[in-house]
Every structure is written in structure tokens, then in C-alpha cells.
Image (cartoon, rainbow, N blue to C red; front, side, top):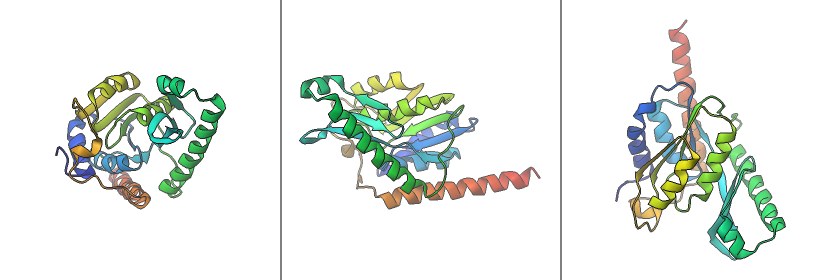
Length: 226
């Protein structure tokens, strides 16, 4: 195994992201659920705010594991044109599925943030983190949504993903970091000793802990400059 668990993967990613430590307006975004646990370690090591960047896949009819695309919170839509063409789905079906997933994304983001506002992204160096990538559909939707917020630099940092997907994602961001990009690739979980399901409660706890740490650091900075 390359990673003991998601926290270990996050610490390894953080080590490879040290060149961004101290960057002005650095923000770390985790793709829920598992990506938030990885991102929490990156944010802690780089002393950066942590937030969510939620995207959900659009599953093919009768084939829930087949991603024909994905959508982000703002409605940013990515479709695999080849799969959509093969399925010959009407645009109305895709629009209905997209709208349903956007509603679910917004519900989850309200739950995860617990009343806190979303982190500002415009002009920031933004690191988008997930626990692993297979097809890349949700990651592309997430990156395109973040790009619309006009960050000064957009970085993707992921522990593991297939080599061909890495090539696809390099065009979606300014910097693309994968610790492991094997070929052949079977499943993300094969690279973790512990790849158990992450709960909403764990995501909430990670975000709340990061918010408390950020408030503490701001307080220390404020007292130091008084």
C-alpha cells in the first residue's frame, strides 16, 4: 500500500506542496466526502483555510457506477460526450438529473459548513484535493466551477489516479500533482490500507476543526500586530 489512510495521504501531499506554503491568499478545497479528510491535512500543514468544493457524478440509467458526467454546486456541467452519445439520452433527461444533483449538492454544502460562509476564491491560490480519481468526471466539474471564481492560481492535488486521467486533468488547472499515477489502474482503494467510508459527520468535524484553527491563528496574528 502507498497510503495508510486518507490522513496519511494528506500529509504526503502536503509535503509535496511545500512550495506553496506562505502563498498569499492560499485556500484548500476538499471534494467530499473522502477528499475533505485528505484536504484537512494539507490545510493544516500549509496553515490555510479549508472549505468544500462539491461535485457529484451523473450516473447512466440502470448503471449507477457508470459516470456519464458530473455537475458542481453552481451548475457547472461536464459530460462525457462519447458515453452520452452511446446512451442516446434526451437533453431533458440530463437537465433533470443535473438539477436534482445540484439541489443535493447545495443541501450538503449547507450541512457541511454549519452556517459558515464559503471561502472567497477570487485572486486566491486554490488547491483542490480529492482522495483519488478514477474517470475524472467529478474533478473536472469541480475544477471548472472553481475556475469561474477567478482564482489567481488553480492547483489540483490528489494522492492517486490513472495515468490517462492525469493527462486529461492537466489541461483543467495550472498545476497538477499526483503522488502515484499507475498503469494499469484498478481502483483507488487498492492504494490504501484503510479506505473506509467517510461520513457526513467526519466531514463536518474536519471543517469545524479547520475553522477553529483558523480563528485561533487569526487571533494570534491580531495580538501580535497590536
